[in-house]
Length: 83
Image (cartoon, rainbow, N blue to C red):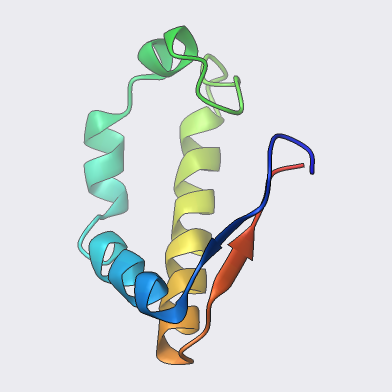
């Protein structure tokens, strides 16, 4: 399945993940963003030298937070994979 097997987290784990993500803000991510270090560690996708990469990261993060918030509220499990 693309970059590895699919992963599964049950509804309780989704709630815990949502709780962990909730206090993280885009401002926190901006302050801690280090594109050079992410490239050195081969963090997927390897686009972190692009000036727009931080905007990409922040947009994906906000979408992910909303996704897990909704899944937690609806007591849903999540299956994910990268392709």
